[in-house]
Length: 181
Image (cartoon, rainbow, N blue to C red; front, side, top):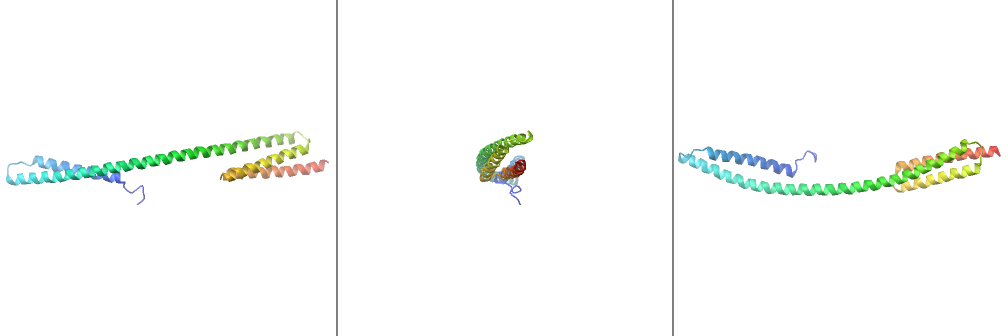
């Protein structure tokens, strides 16, 4: 039986109370309908009253169990709610960390786009282009390390891939620059 399948103390106490209330109702109805016209019927009515009184005692005990179970359920719910609030705060802080790293990644993307525009504009200052590419690669490595330190696997991989792509492009620019000179 799984935790979800197992009846809680609260539901067991509620069912026991319901069962005992029905028993009490039957005993009270039985005591009320017995005609008190014979000694035997008076005995039967007395017996029904006695059993109803015993049932009333059981009802009181079950109500105490139910109150205790309600208190425990309330305490558990409050504990779970507090844990949930703590987790929500943890998630919000983590989202901010991711947003910060993503913002840095977007800045890298902008730098890479500027380098790409310089390359498209035709032959120019290869030294400047290579320096910018190295800066992008270095920043990507730094961001990748920061992401890795913060256990952001996917962002760490993305930064590393970007760094490798920029270094590869930088090597091609170096070869092109060597051919031009």
